[in-house]
Image 1 (cartoon, rainbow, N blue to C red):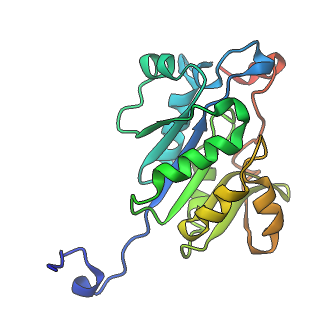
Image 2: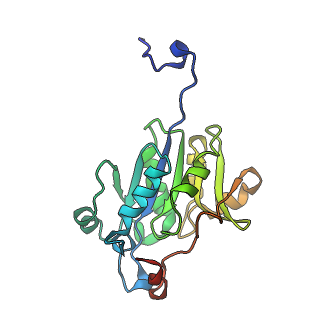
Length: 210
């Protein structure tokens, strides 16, 4: 096999870890009257575009987007240029199915970790993403943003954990059960000084959008 100049055995330098952004944007907005969260207007554009920009600005090497509700409309209206998109046909089952779909899409891409962000948390910006991303150490890394000591998003999963995370991701719990079972392994990264972890779940929450 011919080694490239990027091969650590040739350069003597360790390979830079690849941390992929994983954006979960499949929700149908049931408590918002069926308005898909990815298409909520924020600063004049669909909310999903804002979240993609946050992940990129925070240093994610690529951004994998998981769509579900109104996926065709999201693709028509939102600029997702450069983002691989996975459509989760089981999105109505809850966040767990979207997490499984996203991790499955990243498998085999060479990513060393996935940094998971939810589309309905626009109060979380690039600085929080960058802080959590910087907690990567190995492919067994497990890290999460913390808000006044309470675990939140984004969450970073080293690639060697993906299979177990996916196996535990059921219903609308996402990775909650896995994180609970592995809480002693989580590196918490305080982000309350740079981000707000509110969700856009109800009509009253729309006041957070601009």
